[in-house]
Amino acid sequence: MNNRCALVSKVIPFSCVDGPGSRLALFLQGCNLRCKTCHNPWTIGRCNDCAACVPHCPHDALNIQAGRVWWDEAHCQQCDTCLQMCPQQATPMAQRLSVEEVVAQVRKVSPFISGITVSGGEATTQLPFLLALFATLKADPLLRHLSCLVDSNGLLSETGWQKLLPVLDGAMLDLKAWDNEHHRYLTGRDNAPIKHSIRWLAGHNRLSELRLLVIPERCDYLTHRRELIAFIRRLGDVPVRINAFHTHGVYGEARHWRSATAEDVEPLAEVLERERIRVIRPALYL
Image (tube, rainbow, N blue to C red; front, side, top):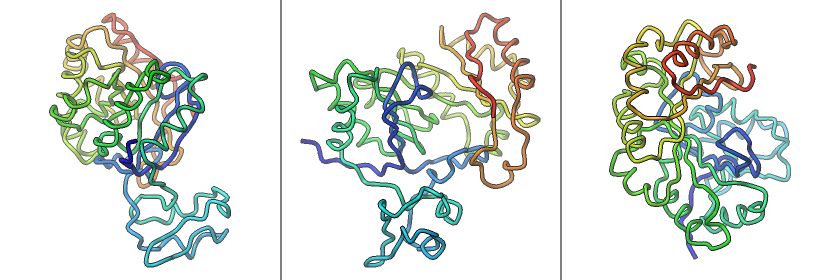
């Protein structure tokens, strides 16, 4: 039995947008980027029990016990008031789950899914749990057919990817901007480690998808199209998913930015397709 635990913000038993087929999607709490465009920003931080959210809960689903904030699921109405009040960009509703508890949930839905995707937050910030979970699934005769994917920002070191490689079927990585300074503006971090992760995973046949985010008036892919195309072509036959920025759930200044439309996405899609790069367009626009 593996009792290693992770802080989990949400489990979706059946998801069709977190990788191929129907998948169980596990969202871990905590992220090492601070993306202005994050549409689930309450998964970035971790609750420090400051209790700023407690008096604002309209359903008395939060209280303080022994100096800790406790969430009462039975009283919670999922109004998300606590998420809006948290100064840490965290959620008091995150739960600590063991590998065995997650595997038990996977087992219940295994006949109806093609795999599991671990996302976040950032999945790789809880790497020991991720390793243990995927290894447990691969070792189980009834579950080893399920593919194990991560949806990652790519900030994991090469050493970390090497540890994950034996139990990882694929990774979906985001490149939020080509220019490093622009990437720092959007996310707070440099993109050189992310580009390295993308190249490394592609070289080991583990890059399932490269993702680009179109933000109207605030993305630089077309400005640097020649460098971007050369970078993508060196990855091999990896599909590029273009995501359209939307303001749903976004905090801060990006709440006032314009959501992307098909007209914003098409110029980039057409440029890439002219270079015979496989492009996956947004399934919908919000």
